[in-house]
Image 1 (tube, rainbow, N blue to C red):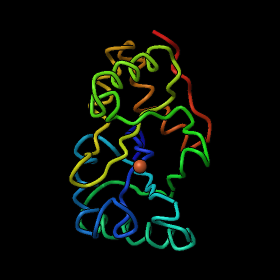
Image 2 (image 1 turned 90 degrees about the vertical axis):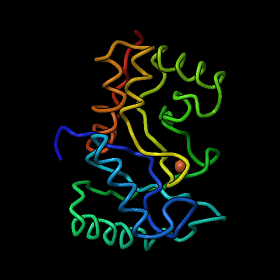
Image 3 (image 1 turned 180 degrees about the horizontal axis):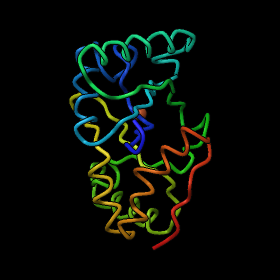
Image 4 (image 1 turned 60 degrees about the vertical axis):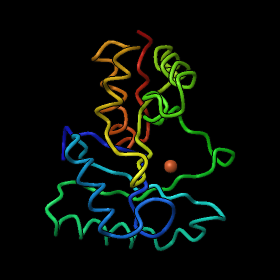
Length: 176
Ligand SMILES: [Fe+2]
């Protein structure tokens, strides 16, 4: 898995929130991520009154998905995480790909790219949900390359998310 991208915001777990509805959808989504060059997915279900309130069974659910992916030949590792509400925890400078890809409109895209260019964003993640928001750090790399040099953009999609997983400290991409 070394040298491959980590997507640290991803609704992969089946049947716990508005992400994958079942294991088949989890496999399908992970397969798309693998095809895009992602080697590690952090499963981040919504932890809120509306969805997951008891996180104690999340490791077992992650293990179940991991085993299924192995069975299906999908070479993606899965780690356990959670998406806390914004008022519970900050976003650590992580930006969703959909914002810089224009999914929230041109104005949001401009603002997001400005933040990327200003060096405020430390890493990119997909916030993937089946059916309406795909995985794919590749598109993030393309868009971030508009605001930064290619090498600096690559930090946001490649080395920074991996470093966050391995060391807990994001690498800040300097402004272009
Ligand atoms: Fe999310």
